[in-house]
Length: 253
Image 1: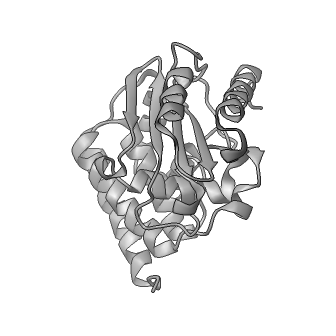
Image 2: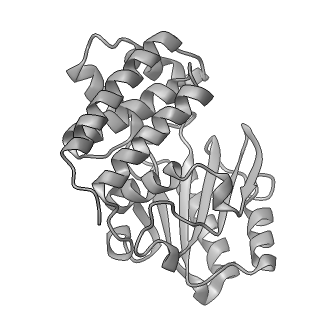
Protein backbone atom coordinates (compact mmCIF):
# COMPACT_ATOMS: atom_id res chain seq x y z
CA UNK A 1 0.00 0.00 0.00
CA UNK A 2 1.25 3.47 -0.87
CA UNK A 3 2.19 5.35 2.34
CA UNK A 4 -0.19 7.99 3.70
CA UNK A 5 2.59 10.52 4.22
CA UNK A 6 3.58 10.36 0.55
CA UNK A 7 -0.08 10.59 -0.50
CA UNK A 8 -0.52 13.78 1.52
CA UNK A 9 2.63 15.23 -0.01
CA UNK A 10 1.42 14.52 -3.54
CA UNK A 11 -1.88 16.19 -2.69
CA UNK A 12 0.06 19.26 -1.56
CA UNK A 13 2.05 19.25 -4.81
CA UNK A 14 -1.11 19.10 -6.92
CA UNK A 15 -2.69 21.92 -4.89
CA UNK A 16 0.44 24.03 -5.41
CA UNK A 17 0.40 23.34 -9.17
CA UNK A 18 -3.29 24.17 -9.49
CA UNK A 19 -2.74 27.43 -7.63
CA UNK A 20 0.27 28.51 -9.72
CA UNK A 21 -0.76 27.21 -13.13
CA UNK A 22 -4.56 27.64 -12.95
CA UNK A 23 -6.25 26.99 -16.32
CA UNK A 24 -2.90 26.23 -17.95
CA UNK A 25 -2.63 22.96 -15.99
CA UNK A 26 -3.69 19.96 -18.10
CA UNK A 27 -2.61 16.91 -16.11
CA UNK A 28 -0.38 15.71 -13.28
CA UNK A 29 0.88 12.13 -13.04
CA UNK A 30 2.90 10.00 -10.68
CA UNK A 31 5.40 7.87 -12.56
CA UNK A 32 8.07 5.54 -11.18
CA UNK A 33 7.78 2.88 -8.51
CA UNK A 34 5.11 4.84 -6.63
CA UNK A 35 2.75 4.34 -9.55
CA UNK A 36 3.97 0.91 -10.61
CA UNK A 37 3.06 -0.85 -7.36
CA UNK A 38 6.61 -1.19 -6.07
CA UNK A 39 7.28 1.87 -3.91
CA UNK A 40 10.03 1.29 -1.36
CA UNK A 41 10.42 3.94 1.34
CA UNK A 42 14.08 4.88 1.43
CA UNK A 43 15.55 4.23 -2.02
CA UNK A 44 12.47 5.18 -4.06
CA UNK A 45 11.89 8.65 -5.51
CA UNK A 46 8.63 10.42 -6.22
CA UNK A 47 8.45 11.11 -9.96
CA UNK A 48 5.86 13.80 -10.70
CA UNK A 49 5.17 14.69 -14.34
CA UNK A 50 3.14 17.78 -15.17
CA UNK A 51 1.61 18.76 -18.52
CA UNK A 52 0.50 22.28 -19.32
CA UNK A 53 -1.10 24.13 -22.22
CA UNK A 54 1.60 26.49 -23.46
CA UNK A 55 4.95 27.56 -22.05
CA UNK A 56 5.92 28.44 -18.51
CA UNK A 57 6.23 32.15 -17.92
CA UNK A 58 9.60 32.96 -16.26
CA UNK A 59 7.98 34.28 -13.08
CA UNK A 60 5.80 31.17 -12.76
CA UNK A 61 8.77 28.92 -13.41
CA UNK A 62 10.75 30.65 -10.67
CA UNK A 63 7.90 30.21 -8.21
CA UNK A 64 7.59 26.53 -9.10
CA UNK A 65 11.29 25.99 -8.46
CA UNK A 66 11.22 27.79 -5.12
CA UNK A 67 7.93 26.38 -3.82
CA UNK A 68 8.64 22.78 -4.83
CA UNK A 69 12.13 22.89 -3.32
CA UNK A 70 12.68 20.44 -0.49
CA UNK A 71 13.37 23.29 1.93
CA UNK A 72 9.95 24.81 1.20
CA UNK A 73 7.89 21.61 0.75
CA UNK A 74 9.81 18.70 2.30
CA UNK A 75 9.63 15.55 0.22
CA UNK A 76 9.04 12.42 2.34
CA UNK A 77 10.84 10.27 -0.23
CA UNK A 78 14.54 10.33 -1.05
CA UNK A 79 13.86 13.06 -3.60
CA UNK A 80 11.27 14.66 -5.84
CA UNK A 81 11.91 14.34 -9.56
CA UNK A 82 9.63 16.87 -11.24
CA UNK A 83 9.26 17.44 -14.97
CA UNK A 84 6.92 19.92 -16.67
CA UNK A 85 6.04 19.64 -20.36
CA UNK A 86 4.03 21.74 -22.76
CA UNK A 87 1.56 19.05 -23.81
CA UNK A 88 2.02 20.04 -27.47
CA UNK A 89 5.69 19.03 -27.25
CA UNK A 90 4.83 15.43 -26.34
CA UNK A 91 1.59 14.82 -28.26
CA UNK A 92 2.72 13.39 -30.56
CA UNK A 93 5.82 12.30 -28.73
CA UNK A 94 9.23 13.19 -30.17
CA UNK A 95 12.33 10.98 -30.19
CA UNK A 96 14.01 13.59 -27.98
CA UNK A 97 11.27 15.08 -25.76
CA UNK A 98 11.39 18.79 -25.01
CA UNK A 99 10.49 19.89 -21.48
CA UNK A 100 9.79 23.23 -19.84
CA UNK A 101 11.36 22.42 -16.48
CA UNK A 102 13.30 19.54 -14.95
CA UNK A 103 13.75 19.84 -11.18
CA UNK A 104 15.33 17.40 -8.73
CA UNK A 105 15.25 18.22 -5.03
CA UNK A 106 15.51 16.20 -1.82
CA UNK A 107 17.55 15.14 1.14
CA UNK A 108 20.33 13.45 -0.84
CA UNK A 109 20.89 15.91 -3.66
CA UNK A 110 21.75 19.52 -4.24
CA UNK A 111 18.87 21.13 -6.08
CA UNK A 112 19.18 20.46 -9.81
CA UNK A 113 17.30 22.72 -12.23
CA UNK A 114 17.27 22.50 -16.02
CA UNK A 115 15.20 24.43 -18.54
CA UNK A 116 17.26 23.42 -21.57
CA UNK A 117 16.60 19.85 -22.79
CA UNK A 118 19.79 19.88 -24.86
CA UNK A 119 21.80 19.73 -21.61
CA UNK A 120 20.22 16.45 -20.47
CA UNK A 121 20.29 12.90 -21.82
CA UNK A 122 16.95 12.48 -23.59
CA UNK A 123 16.65 8.76 -22.94
CA UNK A 124 15.52 9.44 -19.34
CA UNK A 125 12.53 11.44 -20.53
CA UNK A 126 11.56 9.21 -23.44
CA UNK A 127 11.54 6.10 -21.26
CA UNK A 128 9.59 7.86 -18.50
CA UNK A 129 6.93 8.88 -21.01
CA UNK A 130 6.78 5.41 -22.52
CA UNK A 131 6.48 3.58 -19.22
CA UNK A 132 4.29 6.22 -17.60
CA UNK A 133 1.78 6.16 -20.45
CA UNK A 134 1.12 2.50 -19.65
CA UNK A 135 1.55 2.47 -15.89
CA UNK A 136 1.37 6.04 -14.56
CA UNK A 137 -1.08 7.10 -11.86
CA UNK A 138 -3.32 10.12 -12.47
CA UNK A 139 -3.13 12.81 -9.80
CA UNK A 140 -5.03 15.42 -11.82
CA UNK A 141 -6.68 15.52 -15.24
CA UNK A 142 -7.02 12.85 -17.91
CA UNK A 143 -5.33 9.48 -17.68
CA UNK A 144 -1.85 9.11 -19.24
CA UNK A 145 -3.18 6.72 -21.88
CA UNK A 146 -5.82 9.27 -22.90
CA UNK A 147 -3.44 12.24 -23.06
CA UNK A 148 -0.09 10.85 -24.24
CA UNK A 149 0.71 9.21 -27.54
CA UNK A 150 2.43 5.84 -27.69
CA UNK A 151 6.21 5.80 -27.99
CA UNK A 152 7.39 3.59 -30.88
CA UNK A 153 9.03 0.39 -29.67
CA UNK A 154 12.11 1.04 -31.80
CA UNK A 155 12.65 4.35 -29.98
CA UNK A 156 12.24 2.69 -26.61
CA UNK A 157 14.80 0.02 -27.44
CA UNK A 158 17.24 2.64 -28.70
CA UNK A 159 16.75 4.62 -25.49
CA UNK A 160 17.55 1.50 -23.45
CA UNK A 161 20.87 1.27 -25.28
CA UNK A 162 21.49 4.95 -24.50
CA UNK A 163 20.73 4.25 -20.84
CA UNK A 164 23.14 1.32 -20.76
CA UNK A 165 25.90 3.49 -22.23
CA UNK A 166 25.24 6.25 -19.71
CA UNK A 167 25.44 3.85 -16.78
CA UNK A 168 28.58 2.20 -18.16
CA UNK A 169 30.46 5.48 -17.92
CA UNK A 170 28.69 7.29 -15.08
CA UNK A 171 27.68 4.58 -12.58
CA UNK A 172 29.76 1.46 -13.30
CA UNK A 173 29.34 -0.12 -9.84
CA UNK A 174 25.94 1.09 -8.62
CA UNK A 175 22.89 -1.07 -7.94
CA UNK A 176 20.94 1.36 -10.11
CA UNK A 177 23.00 0.38 -13.14
CA UNK A 178 22.08 -3.26 -12.62
CA UNK A 179 18.41 -2.65 -11.92
CA UNK A 180 17.92 -0.33 -14.89
CA UNK A 181 19.53 -2.92 -17.15
CA UNK A 182 17.22 -5.61 -15.80
CA UNK A 183 14.14 -3.50 -16.47
CA UNK A 184 15.29 -2.87 -20.03
CA UNK A 185 16.14 -6.53 -20.65
CA UNK A 186 12.68 -7.59 -19.49
CA UNK A 187 11.04 -5.08 -21.83
CA UNK A 188 13.19 -6.17 -24.78
CA UNK A 189 12.17 -9.80 -24.41
CA UNK A 190 8.56 -9.49 -23.21
CA UNK A 191 7.35 -6.06 -24.32
CA UNK A 192 6.27 -5.38 -20.74
CA UNK A 193 7.43 -2.50 -18.56
CA UNK A 194 7.45 -2.42 -14.79
CA UNK A 195 9.54 -1.18 -11.92
CA UNK A 196 13.27 -1.77 -11.70
CA UNK A 197 12.77 -4.33 -8.94
CA UNK A 198 10.21 -6.17 -11.05
CA UNK A 199 12.73 -6.26 -13.88
CA UNK A 200 15.38 -7.58 -11.53
CA UNK A 201 13.11 -10.36 -10.30
CA UNK A 202 12.43 -11.35 -13.91
CA UNK A 203 16.14 -11.52 -14.76
CA UNK A 204 16.92 -13.42 -11.55
CA UNK A 205 14.27 -16.01 -12.45
CA UNK A 206 15.34 -16.46 -16.06
CA UNK A 207 19.11 -16.05 -15.57
CA UNK A 208 19.94 -17.27 -12.03
CA UNK A 209 23.66 -17.31 -12.82
CA UNK A 210 23.67 -13.49 -12.71
CA UNK A 211 24.16 -13.17 -8.97
CA UNK A 212 24.91 -9.46 -9.33
CA UNK A 213 21.14 -8.95 -9.58
CA UNK A 214 20.45 -10.17 -6.03
CA UNK A 215 23.47 -8.18 -4.84
CA UNK A 216 21.98 -5.04 -6.38
CA UNK A 217 18.59 -5.64 -4.77
CA UNK A 218 20.27 -5.99 -1.38
CA UNK A 219 22.69 -3.07 -1.63
CA UNK A 220 20.24 -0.51 -3.02
CA UNK A 221 18.91 0.22 0.48
CA UNK A 222 22.22 1.48 1.84
CA UNK A 223 23.39 2.94 -1.50
CA UNK A 224 26.19 0.41 -1.64
CA UNK A 225 28.08 -0.87 -4.67
CA UNK A 226 28.18 -4.00 -6.78
CA UNK A 227 31.02 -5.72 -8.58
CA UNK A 228 31.59 -3.60 -11.68
CA UNK A 229 32.84 -6.56 -13.74
CA UNK A 230 29.69 -8.53 -12.96
CA UNK A 231 27.64 -5.46 -13.87
CA UNK A 232 29.59 -5.25 -17.15
CA UNK A 233 28.60 -8.83 -17.95
CA UNK A 234 24.95 -8.08 -17.25
CA UNK A 235 25.11 -4.98 -19.46
CA UNK A 236 26.64 -6.99 -22.33
CA UNK A 237 23.90 -9.59 -22.12
CA UNK A 238 21.24 -6.92 -21.92
CA UNK A 239 22.62 -5.26 -25.05
CA UNK A 240 22.48 -8.58 -26.85
CA UNK A 241 18.80 -8.97 -25.97
CA UNK A 242 17.97 -5.36 -26.90
CA UNK A 243 19.80 -5.57 -30.23
CA UNK A 244 18.01 -8.82 -31.04
CA UNK A 245 14.69 -7.07 -30.35
CA UNK A 246 15.69 -4.12 -32.56
CA UNK A 247 16.33 -6.47 -35.49
CA UNK A 248 12.72 -7.69 -35.32
CA UNK A 249 11.17 -4.26 -34.77
CA UNK A 250 10.01 -1.96 -37.54
CA UNK A 251 11.42 1.54 -37.18
CA UNK A 252 8.89 4.41 -37.29
CA UNK A 253 8.67 6.17 -40.63
